[in-house]
Every structure is written in structure tokens, then in C-alpha cells.
Amino acid sequence: MKIATYNVNGVNGRLPVLLRWLDEARPDVVCLQELKAPQERFPLAAIEAAGYGAIWLGQKSWNGVAILARGDQPHETRRGLPGEAEDLHSRYIEAAVNGVLVGCLYLPNGNPAPGPKFDYKLRWFARFQAYAASLLEHDVPIVLAGDYNVMPTDLDVYKPERWLNDALFRPEVREAYRRLVDQGWTDALRTLHPDERIYTFWDYFRNAYGRDAGLRIDHLLLSPQLAPRLSRAQVDRHVRGWDKTSDHAPTWIELDA
Image 1 (tube, rainbow, N blue to C red):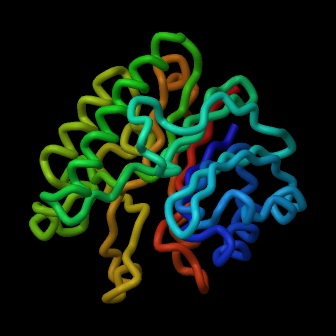
Image 2: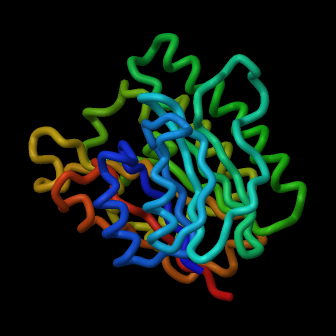
Image 3: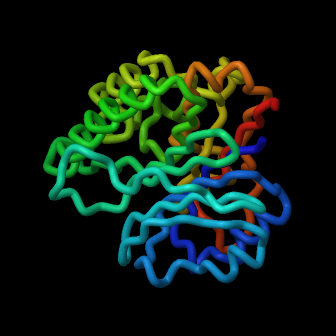
């Protein structure tokens, strides 16, 4: 079973890239972030023509998350993160697919930090931690996949000294990620590649992709029931080099039956 996460940075504008990658990689489950489209403008017909069922939570101009399943229809179990009723950002959706509970998330960026956006990021992270802990109580296979907007360690950023005050790398955010993982989650990519500099994001500016000046901010966390099935974890970094592509690359895992 191949499960991927991909921040598409605009699902309609990047649709040809998404469809090309789906045809090439043939993932079984895909978590998409930054749809940047209202609910009614999700390109369902094109996704279905590619062989995927979908659920999605859209938002005009910003945010938006979706879960795709190849040859199947995801069974939605939640849309929206609990804990702050006035938060209307489309950042979390969840479904059961082939015996695995899949949570797709787009954690806030939080810049500039400090400031209101950073405070919101920390609140959202705290809510997510609480909800993730409650999921573990169910004792089922779970993957929490998405754009976490966190570089957990120095190994996850090309020049750590330049990012010390950025909301993606501040100590409060890295500590929040560490507390999340310490609940019992397995960081799939880092587990299989403990010492490698592997990035999932390259900025559009200053030839970041060409210089490999990247960040690892897209993560797949596995519950204790799912972690023993992990066999592969990779980034399709070549997709970042395609024309009119996202600044992220698809990140994926393979699970044994």
C-alpha cells in the first residue's frame, strides 16, 4: 500500500502536474494540501477520470485539504480539527481507506514570528496534539500525513543558522513536533533515512531547487499499529523540477500487507 502526501499549491492551476504524477507514481492513497479552491471548484471529474475517488474540504484562495484513493472511495470520518469552533480554516480531513485511518493536515505557517499568526500556529498544533493522542486510544492503524510546516532538526534544513527565527524552525515549534512524535508516532521518512539530508520543499526563488537549498516540512507519522508495516519512504523530488509545478514534491511511504 502506497500512501503519499503532496502540497499542490493550487489544485486547479497544478492539475496537469498532479495528474501526470498520479499516472506515473500510482499511489493508493494521496493527501493533498493547499487546494486554494472553494468546495465547488475541486476538479472531481478529472480526479475520477484518473481512477481516484476523493473527499475534500475546500476554501477560497487559501488552505484546503483532500484525500484521494485509487479505485476506491475514501470513507470520511472527520472534517475539521476539534477544539476551536471559530477556526474556519480548511486544514484537516480524515478518512478510512483499505483498513487504514488517514488524517490529512495542513498546519499553519505561522510567519511572521512572533505575532498573531505564530500564536495561531501554536494553538493549532496544541489542538492537533490533543486530537492525535485521542486517535491513539483507538488502537487502529493510522497515518497522519501532510504539510506540517516544521523542520524538526538541523538535518531538515539546508542552512539552519538562517532559519532560527522563522516560524517553521523556532524552538517552540520543533518542541511541539517532538512532543507529538513522543506520543508514540513514527516519523516514517526519518526512520528509514536517519542520517540523510532529504528535502520535500524548495522555494521558487534564488534557484533553490537547482542549489538543493531545501526544507523537509512534509511528514507522514505512523501509529504503533502501522509502523511495523513500513517498508519504504521516499520523496519524488524530480516532480519539483517539472514545469509549472508546486514548490513541494510528493512524499510517500510503502506499507507491507
